Image (cartoon, rainbow, N blue to C red):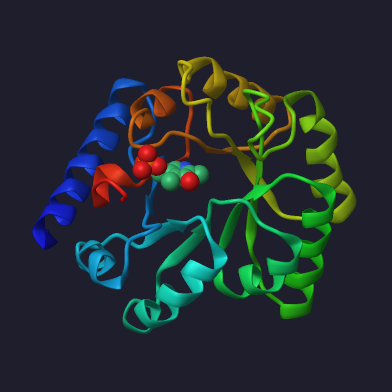
Length: 222
Ligand SMILES: *Cc1c(COP(=O)(O)O)cnc(C)c1O
């Protein structure tokens, strides 16, 4: 178990480097976010020991249980929130996370702005776009994205670094990655958080700067 997560990490890193080379991307231009949701400290430690420092979690409370202790031993960890956020959790999220990928409505954007100021924390933010316009999925609708980006960045002054999307499970991801890339490009945003275990190499071809890989590193979630 222990060596296998580290081996998987090594394999994913090589696949990322390969995809960067194949698609003409700068070496090292893609950040691997190791998604450790549902896995506990014991499973995460070997991956930390193998040198990984960027991790993603999708629930604030679960991350609060696991990461303060791990961070005592690995203080340079960078923690990304990749799951939906309720505004009543904004305080805890701003305390714990360095980057939030799931800003998708005015209420949460305002709450995050207020909390970062109150706490004097310099977080970075991605706006989640619901590229498949799926009713059950979080994210701003593609046709509302330009206005929402402008609201967050220009009106609120939130440091928006890029866009994030989770393509529909039952569709080819390429067109969704292309759409996210297009919206980011016309808004002058550099960051693209897209691509998971099954499709991160495809996402790199469409300009992903952050790939969020869970099961391909940690194994399947029960
Ligand atoms: C769980 C999750 C991932 C990782 O998914 P894998 O298929 O296990 O790589 C990526 N992004 C988000 C938003 C997730 O919730």
